[in-house]
Length: 87
Picture 1 (cartoon, helix red, strand yellow):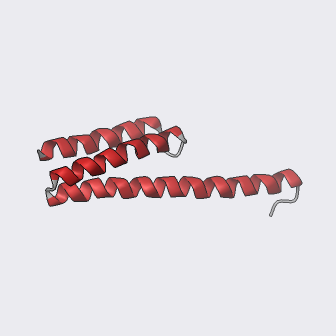
Picture 2 (picture 1 turned 90 degrees about the horizontal axis):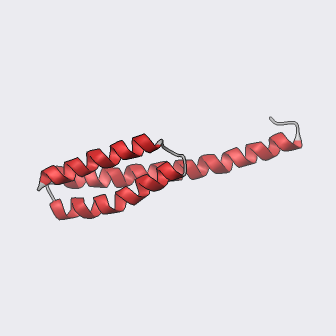
């Protein structure tokens, strides 16, 4: 355990950041899963709406530093490709 006041504060900050990052990552994965599920069921309109919800959140995760910007771009590209090939 931390002995210095600054180390105690750093632990508090790390816990808060970890909780925030975990929430953002988990929510992003849920949105991605919704897109993939809609594509698997062949529901084009649902897939498009799910993709419209997922893209801004993936961008937000990249902006916050939860995922790398190239990873975000790759995820968006692959999901868009899936939805476009459905039609």
